[in-house]
Image (cartoon, rainbow, N blue to C red):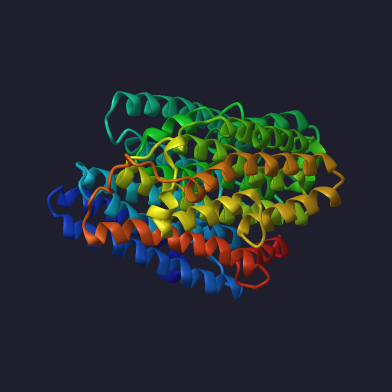
Length: 496
């Protein structure tokens, strides 16, 4: 697969959404039916492309597109097993989010603008997934910031504009750190591609301080989007955005792009051996552990439902960073598989929160009383995802925590188990009261009737969370299957 259009499939994976975005911008606001067809067609074609590459890579094939921009500076898109872990999650959830968003925005204005930037965000996320070196990663990482900002401020309210300003301040500040570190590393080892076990070890002698500084700068730049403490402040504020955008930020694109970048940095730029030699892994693990506990503590007292879920994301995405920072194959498996598991569970929670907000006007935790009995399928979906976040077997979250805890003990880091236990107890403390309200509190007598929507809109907002909740349960129950996310992650680690 080294030449021709087939080898360039990572490029087509990106271009599918880019072309969809351009077409949506061109057709304008009024042609709703055509826009819906374009959205769904683009999402389905992308999923097919990813599925083809998934099968081929499992069989040992390689895909790469390379274009020389400057001497020694290439734009590289490739599809390896790690690429396809992120790309499969993104393509699958984006199809469901597209369906959900079509129903959610049925009566909204500026839908062409929304879906145009929505598709552009997909293209950027796929570019992040398929990037073959830090330079290519940086290009799509920046495009992701520019594409998602209009979605954060979509409603145009004062609160949305403030949240957008904060979002740009954090993400562009992080990008400046990332670019500084990237330039510094390029001065040490120019034009290096992502490769298993990293590529900087031969240049380490006598340059440890420079490499350590480069690692810290790049990790901090990525930590802005990954919402690592103290770079997390933008995420809860961004919850003024519509529910499909919240799902996008938390489960598929922005925070995952940051976490995925840290995985590439540790595994495919520096490598575990050099990370251990420089002593930066334990510092990164400490930041991740702090973020896990801090995010959970903040979620515990947050009265707004979407903001509580946002603080949960601050905590949960750091599981990915913790797994890769600890080193060792078992912890790495736990971190990588949580990239998928957290996405399935968190998108379910935001889908459900969006349904309750749009149809029942519910935004605060205190108003959830009895909503499970009013919307049973949505209530059951939320409950499954919440129990998975706590770590109840066999839902997906249990699998992640099991491997992270086992890997921490195998690597001689018992403090990590204490972090995981504390996080689990805090998860239970802020999710179980929600489940109790949903199912065991009486519906207030003055509760308004659900907003009446078209039949398609109701289905479009109800079916996606049911599917993602079923997937969150299924990938935990069938974790031993070779084609489960866990099985694929184990393939990745074996090939490292």
